[in-house]
Length: 188
Image (cartoon, rainbow, N blue to C red; front, side, top):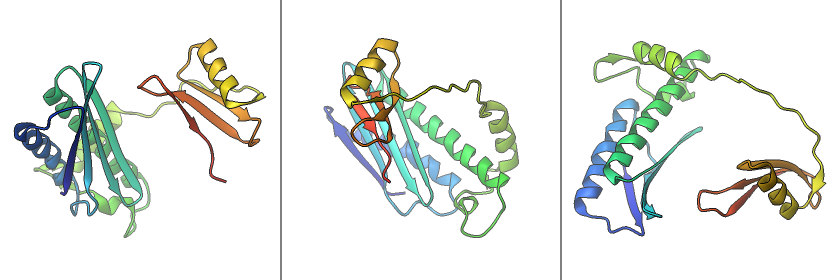
């Protein structure tokens, strides 16, 4: 795996690079062939929190995980565990669909390190069952982006769905981790 590590507001030591490369490199055992695109790792520090972001672009799947903590090494361990869970989830999904050449199923190994995939799949199904627990319906009031941000802040949520009065499309505003705001809008 081609692991590209970069740092933001942190001095990347050889020990830190080596540790991140070793831990994230272990994910290679889950793939039939190593990912051809690079694995992007960003290590950063902000507000005394150590952040690790890892992105693994695959055909038809984007694996991404982020972890924050007081210790960079612990954050690397936790982000690796998150990525392993994601890989097993995608493997479970692939097993549920029809098996055909070129599908997502062909990305992941049937077994790894002597552990049968079926055992891991059963474990993942028990651990990470996707369950919808609530459905909410409401009328979308046309408003501009600034009003949507104000509404979001008034209700105390991290996101707000609204009908954009400028584009006449459904948009979402959200609060980013840095305290600023983002906007999600459809392409078409």
